[in-house]
Image (cartoon, rainbow, N blue to C red):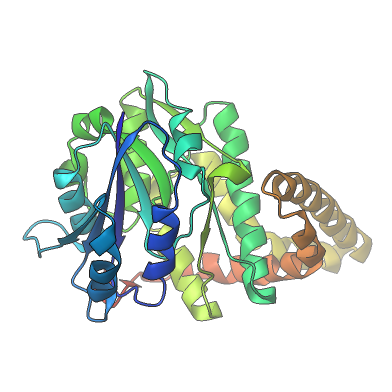
Length: 326
């Protein structure tokens, strides 16, 4: 089987080398692979770093992404890379990712004739307390998405760790035929699953990619607001879950006004459920020691998701990699 690994890169000079090194170290068995790196009009040294690295790696190709009259942002970069890809499967990842050695083989072994999309698992590097809080956040919510997938409920893809059958990609018309979205991975995932293709959401340390944690509170809010750009299209249950998370602190305040013991009991129950789930999910990812950050994560999530939901109710303007979108 031929596999095309696809990486869109824009201004990633700080991270791209580590990503390339992890891609070069992948085990791929008897499969044929090509690795396409798209330089999306970077204004830093991204292209030069890639060019110098791939001199000794013929499986890598650097492709210059050109402006498009119809496509915007990362969608344009991915569309052009997919046009040049020749694999039976496209595996998407990001330029700030580091992948484990057997990542490719573990994803490919899950392929069946009916499979259209396979989603791996990603968390930020837990290099400090702030990054560790984000690690717990990703682990918890991706764990819930994985659990729902076992009930065959499709929620979303994740463009930094997602494999798509070429036949499925072509059947939905590729990115050229999909409506523009800041969450192009969600849009592609939903298009493929709506066509009847099977999907898998993996939750396994062998397919665990590591990404960069967002450095500041403001940037984290911007990231999550961008991820929720398609909020109106989410299933009702997911919408209620997000809103419930955001307004939970107001529920606690209301219960505390009625009876402080009620508020304490509700919060204790939430902490018990969340810590139990996180313990399971972190164990699966070989990250169980970070459960020690749980109480700090719980306080963080109360404030962060309240702030995020309030932002969702305000007029929306999004920015990504120096580009603005309305």
